[in-house]
Image (cartoon, rainbow, N blue to C red; front, side, top):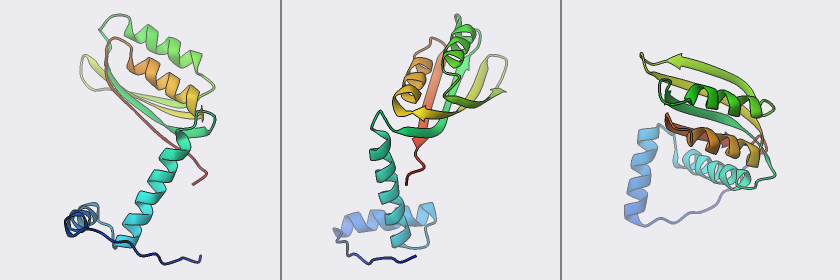
Length: 135
C-alpha cells in the first residue's frame, strides 16, 4: 500500500490535547490517530445519506415491567425483520434487560427502527452505532 505524506499545523494547546488523547487511546503515533479520525468522519458522512446501506448495532436497556414494553419491542422487531440479522437478550436484574440488535439495511430504515425502539415507554437508554463497508 502506498501512502502520501501531508502536513498538518496545530495550535500548541490543540496539539497538547491531541497528544494526550493519543496516549489515552494507545495509538502508536499521530499519523494513525489522524487516519482513524478521518476514517470516522468519512463513515459518518457516508451513513448520513438515507439511501446508503449500513451495518451496525442497536443496544438498549429497558424495564420489562413497564407498560406494554415487551409487546411493543417485539412488534417493532418483527416489523423490521429484514433489517435485523441477530438479537441477544441479557437479564441485568429482576427488572432491567439489555438487548442488542445487529442490523443491516438502508440507513433510513435502520434509523427508523432505532428511533421507534428508543421512544417506547420503558426503554431507558438506547444507542445506535452504524457503519458502512465502503470505507
